[in-house]
Length: 148
Image 1: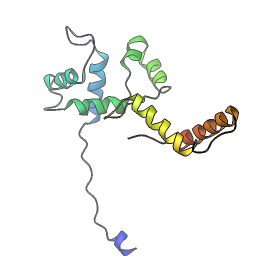
Image 2: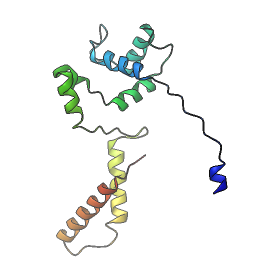
Image 3: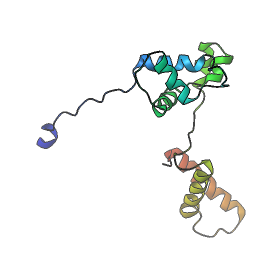
Image 4: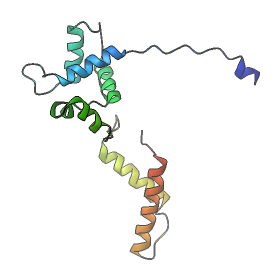
């Protein structure tokens, strides 16, 4: 107990990107892409932020993380009013693939887990097999297990 109470205070984390920069990123993404391009790339957004002197330096991965965090969907903002686009974006959940793989790798991993956890024993008929798979899937989804 004394060790927990006497522990040093941890340093506060410095935010790499402020709310103003996040807002500028969103504004850039909603604007017309650079001449000769059909869409904004992470590199183009980073270069535009530097050109506009919003930041001195920013990486593409930082821009990507801001985009993930804000869940900005440019197409919705282009097609609908900002209020309607905000309402719609709350209805969607984005799923990103792992850094070192693809959605197919994720599916193969899940099938392997299911076969070890739920399908280890033989089944007398197709109905009991389907019931076991359905029950396992419901439990697995309820636990919100993630890969990577």
